[in-house]
Amino acid sequence: MGCSLSSNEHTSCAAIGGQKPKLREEPLDARLGRIPISGRYHGDTRKIEQDYIVTQQVLSSSCNGEVRIATSRSQHGQNFVVKSIPRRSRSNLSFLSKDSDMDQLSEVENHLCMDHPHITRLLDVYETKENFHLVMEYMEGGDLHEFVIDNGRFSEQEARKAIHQMLLALDYIHRQGVVHRDVKLENFLRDSKGSLQLTDFGFSRSCGASGKEEWTDGCGSVGYIAPEVVKCIRGKKSGYSTQCDMWSVGVIGFILLSGVMPFTGDEAARMSKISRGRYNMKPELWSSVSPDGINFIQALLTVCPSKRLTAHTALKHPWFSPIQGEAAASFVVKRDDVSGTDDTTVGSGSDHTPTDVVFEDREHSDDSREWL
Image (cartoon, rainbow, N blue to C red; front, side):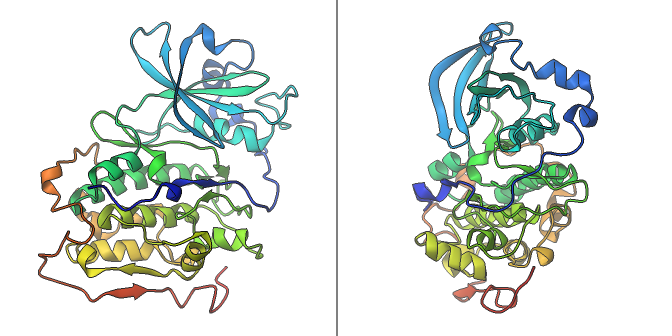
């Protein structure tokens, strides 16, 4: 039996309002060097059809574009994926120009900067009047959302290794001054060995080298968005930065360990619960989870961003002591190691059975005081 995740839990929200994002002052080639860019960014001087055979099979589709399978003309038999991002303007945009539209080029710009074992690699970029075509690695294992739906909740050991890989990726991009803004199960892909890689930088933005630049446009995926993003959606004077990604990791951890979403109901109900940090850890779902595991999730689902764990501090949490600081290169799920998939039976045989407690971050909720 799969997990209790409804199909609308992973629907992305369009930007609702707020300030116009500004393109970084320094050109991309100044940060990476012109050779790495010219080698992978082909502009409109070369067509994708010259290097790849793009099939009509659509793997996924969203407001950030369609993803299709492609094969390389030079590397026979090797599959890739091509994400085609529609251009809102047909004007002649130069990729390295300060006049480029950040809304359309942020994914290309930020993803080209990334070089990490737990981030999908952007191999080639092609530009036409209608689209940007992004060529990336093909991940045979699919996305983590599909895997959880098909296989159910993780054992604590599996969840620890998976979240450790997520944190390694997020710590890396946050150190690069980039906030992802759409961290969710669907945006972690599995390779053939089960190792995770972060993908889809369509909503990503630069926070500057200090990571303190804030954004006020409401975007992300319903169910995963942080309280500070909810405030922006509601039109309140606020802002958010890299810490919004960490709240989303807390949501993912909650799902992996319990098999259910922490915030349920219609959109308004979920946003109300998120803004107050209100969620329920039912004993029949959490009694088998260690105190360190429960504490880790609570430390991420903290309404106040400054009190929430950062990616760097999260990696040092006692829950990860069994990993001993190693990168957890891969994990292979053995379904017989999981003591059930029905969210009402797993963990029922544990020696410690907590009471049915509804957690609410009253100190930092919208209902009590401002926390930004």
